[in-house]
Length: 307
Image (tube, rainbow, N blue to C red; front, side, top):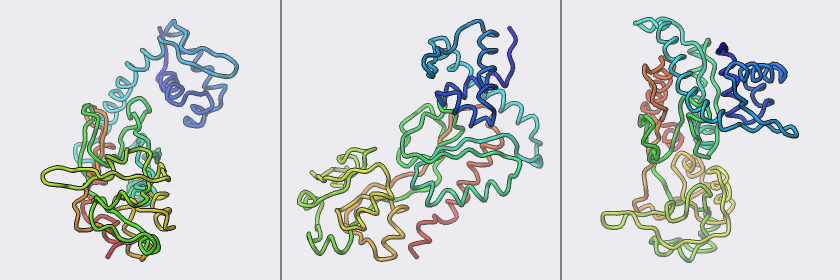
């Protein structure tokens, strides 16, 4: 049984992306090279890994089991090789690649400049950055690290808190002039609220009452899957919205939105870096997380925008 590291990486890329075309783009290779590597890998392991039917490629049960074992093994192999090349004083340049997943609004509004400075400081390091509000499966989708807003839900992941962002209820002045200003959470039932498709209203619209958070009855006809889009509809006067401060701060500073129910305590969301457990921790991953923490610890960009 002989196979190459290139074949393993190609196999995992096809598993993650679901198509030969996607793997070819990811690895910057032709589709014919991807197909040959997969065929050679199937011969080497002695098992059919994909079923091909009318242009579609579907993993077999053997492929699913093999991928589950190869993903952590390949990560450990890369980490060991990088640790060997990393000098004790950190003088060796960071090399290899890092795949980063982050929420869309946080990424486009605040994370990109931070990552740009990291990329400029480490020119030999390749970065793959994907912004998406969906909760990504880091291990299965091949990400080294993810940025999460809110409490971590996967206890299997390592985490480091980078900073916090409070949530706030906002609306445009035009909306408030038409519909009135809510004075208490119970008043929200008489208003249109803008929903977030990745979170139920009962989780989103929460206010501390006594020793716990409660959610008033709310309803609205608009539901979106992105914080900036929710902000823009609130600016357009179409309803009240609950937004993280990092999304709402600039619109409030510029007078497009007004905070309401400011005397009510809403949830404060931790901003976390999370990553699959790996030992030893690759120097490139440690350097990235340290960079993120230092940048956000020194003054959150959205707070500086609001000054």
